[in-house]
Amino acid sequence: MSKTNDFAGQYSRIENTTNLKGEIISSGDFRVDGVLEGSIKIKGKIVVGKEGLIDGSVSCESADIEGKIKGKINVSGAFNLRSSAVVEGEVTMGKLIVECGAILNAKCRMKKDELLGDVKTLPKINKGHEKTA
Image (tube, rainbow, N blue to C red):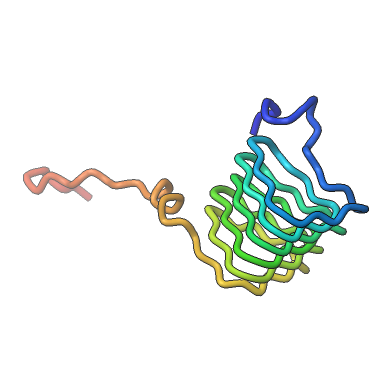
């Protein structure tokens, strides 16, 4: 993902000293090192740091999780769980990447649209074509 959505390569963020209740909507990338109780809907990447906690719903293009998420999660691309990640709830994702040590206690579903993109249809063999060994 290009850095055009964020400011000088920096994520919008919730610092580790901050507890926030409410809804966040952003067209850029976002990092959570504090606590968010509510929902976050972004068009870019979300990063949850080791001390970060999201208790609510998450919708994003991709996610890199080191902290905790509890709730309904929708990631259209890669859902990357680092070794310190703890995820509980319901997850819909395009691709799942899990490091050893991560905890995933969730109902998971892969998006069908993402899976169909990897399937290639082979051309039909012409029955009149001579087969040779």
